[in-house]
Structure formats: structure tokens, C-alpha cells
Image 1: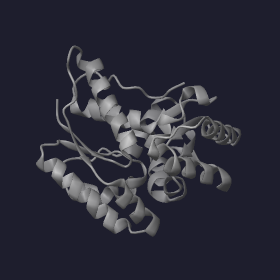
Image 2: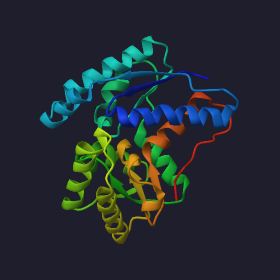
Image 3: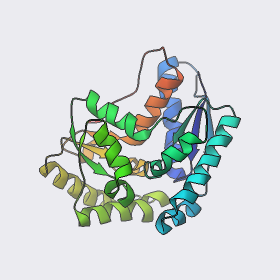
Image 4: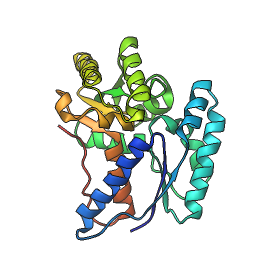
Length: 240
């Protein structure tokens, strides 16, 4: 098995999920006591979040690029950015190393297409929902992407940063997300992309009338498949 390099800490709550998923998928594929070969570089999310708010993406990209170089030096054979939003600087990270970057949006688009769907609703941070770096990548992958209205986007963003990134899971927030999902389905969405890795702490397939695509799970499955290339893919595509 090749070594998977993770740029994590954004937030550590979802990075912990990545670590669990990588090891679960590896055990499913190889059996017994097998676990994933991986290296984690965990950044200080407070620093990254400050740069996001200030619009200092170049500086944030330099931090993640340095993390990627450290992972490569530690023996990683590939790099994953364990957050959807920071794929805004994916090109800078990719340029900093000679090992491949497994882009989260690509893994997600592949899973959606494999399910036979094309028209999807996207939940995530305001950066992810409103800017083109992520939506555009999904659309380039053949998807028709819908996002919530302004009020819905504000609710989704607030819950991510003020609750989920702090490990807080509230039933009233789950109900609010369910309403946003219902509105997206009414707008024609055939599936829902959980386009922030923390959303999987709050929302599951039981909260949606259409299939959901949990991006951390899909990313981890794609990483294990790449690390064990040549063997049977055991990762999931969607959750119903």
C-alpha cells in the first residue's frame, strides 16, 4: 500500500473522520489487522480561518503548500486536502510537490456520475457554494450544480463555522439543513453533495429524500483505491 498524505486540521473534527474512514476502507479491502499507511500534517485552523475571512488566499495557499512539501518529505505518495473550501488553493499545493494531489471535487463528481445522476444540490461554506473554484470543477466534471438561496447559504455557513467545526451538533441545525435540502430538491436537485467535510457530522442519508454524497467519505475511498491501485475498489458512491 502506498502512503497517503493528509493536510488536515481544517477542522480537526473532520480530519479525525478521514483517519477513521481511511483505516476502515483499508480493513474492508485487505482484511485482518490491516490499516492505512498515512501521514497527517495538521495545521492551526484559527490561522487559516482568519486568512479566509481576510481574503488572503495566497498566504493560506503558502501554508498548505508547505504542509504538502512536508508530507512528501515524510514519504507520502499522494496528497489530500481534507477540506472542500481550501481546494481554492489546490493549484498552489499541487505545484509545490512532485506527488499527485487527489482533488476532492474530482472524487465527488466521479461518484455522482457513477450513480447515474447529474443535477445536484451543493451544501458547503459560503466560499464553496458561491465561488467558482469548486462549483466550476464539478460542472467541468459534467454536473449541473444548484446552491441554496441567500438565506439558506447563510444558515449552512454559520452552522459549519460556529457549531460543527467546534464539535457541536444541534438538532435544530439538523432541522434547518433538512429544510435547505428540501428546497434544493424542489428546485430540481436529484442528489445532495455534502460539500463541507464537517457536514457529515450532522447530516446523513436519513435526512434527505434524495441520495447524499458525503465528500470526506468519497475522498477517503478514492485515496484508498489509489493507494491500493490494481485491486478491487471497495469504496461507496452515495448514501441513500
